Length: 211
Image (cartoon, helix red, strand yellow):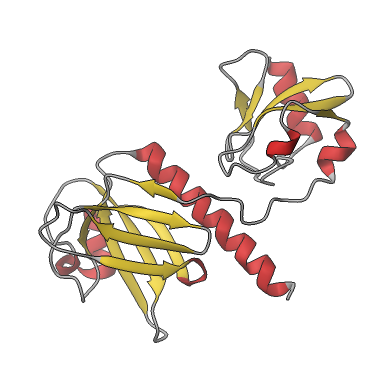
């Protein structure tokens, strides 16, 4: 397995599909290898690669279970706007935005063109804030102390000795806004959200440059 990992790292410093440089890891299905970023899964042959699981962006499904020479995968273009609508929950609003001064229970809805926070039906306080992908300036996990020192202690609606997710974006005016969320320790979910938003921002930027 280690030799396979070394070989694919040497052949493909970047993932053939998502172009990430995060590298690869052994799959649960030996001897497959998985991209650490998009989670595409591969079988390494002597003269090519075979895609055994599509990436989490649900792109390149037409290449599933197909084996092609290394040069084919090296010349493969990144997929464009193939991310499907996805909900990330639980995600409770914990402050940051001066227009919303009360906590809310809800979720984040990610679409190819936007990231939206919506309060749940059972939430006492209602929110529906939509941010275009190109307006996102940061999606970072920070401690309450870090948030207090950079955004202000008054931005956190309830005090908690924990890590929170901070969405930073530009509003209509050239001014940064923040929304802080309690993601209840769901680190894998937050990591996926951050990677998908980063991917969509890059694709959006590429699209704007080519038009």
